[in-house]
Length: 202
Image (cartoon, rainbow, N blue to C red; front, top):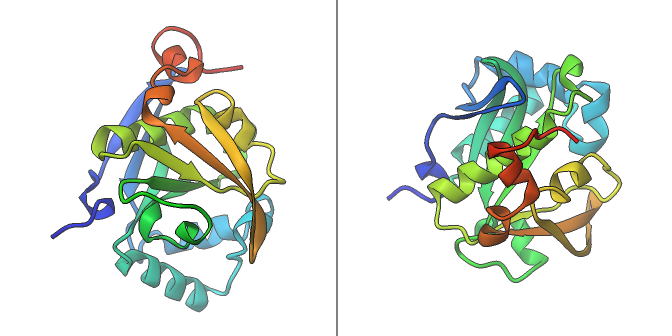
């Protein structure tokens, strides 16, 4: 029987800001040179801490791919790979050690790997796309995220799409900001409503 994460569709896309943003599965090992380059990019290293030699990075991704509470995707902009996201079942993730998770809770991690795509305002439509993808294709009532509290860029998503901070959490590798996004609040958020009527740009 497939897990929640493994039951997610292979592909999803939205149109926003005159761009097409999409998801496709990570192709292993074909995507490894690209993922290696992204993980060694200066703007990614501090947050992800996966600037490993290729053999060790392959071991990491092999473990992730066979772990059935995750689903790994490449983020596309106009069909060009620009980033990477992990969508996971929070109840079966180590994050459940830090809050009282429910079996339907889902979470995600994101990186924008291509340097020419950083600072372009893409994180907002991508965050909206991933949130919508989860709510449309699972029974999740809540999405959780735990970015490093020092990373300011996530506030552009959290403030706009009803992600509300719960508290700071001391994890081994970071002081995380624990956010909850509830399904009904997401669909009423100014970011989601803006997807249909207003620009997603600030």
